Length: 177
Image (spheres, rainbow, N blue to C red):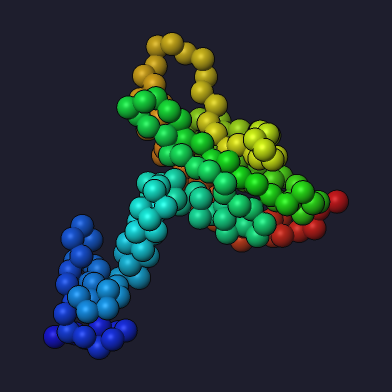
């Protein structure tokens, strides 16, 4: 029988919902198994601890990975209520903070062909200057609002992938003029 990599315990249990790819130690709680599956389980647990669904958390994590960017509030939307996803971010009031916003906006523009909806980054003032990231829905009374919310929620993952990809490219770290 395999032993836990952290504590050496032998009480390893297959984690349900992972297809047997992840084990959890019954003694210390450490996760082991397929690295990608373990990462997904950790992310899902972190998302739940922060009260977010995993798609929203993926975008929040990508944004918070940008030095100086802080997610102040995030809501993944609700198909039941017709509420769209929204993320409020704060950046330092410096040239670098504005450059970070410009890079985020450029990443959104580059991701546009893969997005269900156009997304906008707009200024909002709530006790301080915040920047609101949200989808822009075309005015069309024939569409289902619940369907729009689900499609916008899919965009959260696309935006997270775009931000992570673009941060590794040369243009992201190039000095701004």
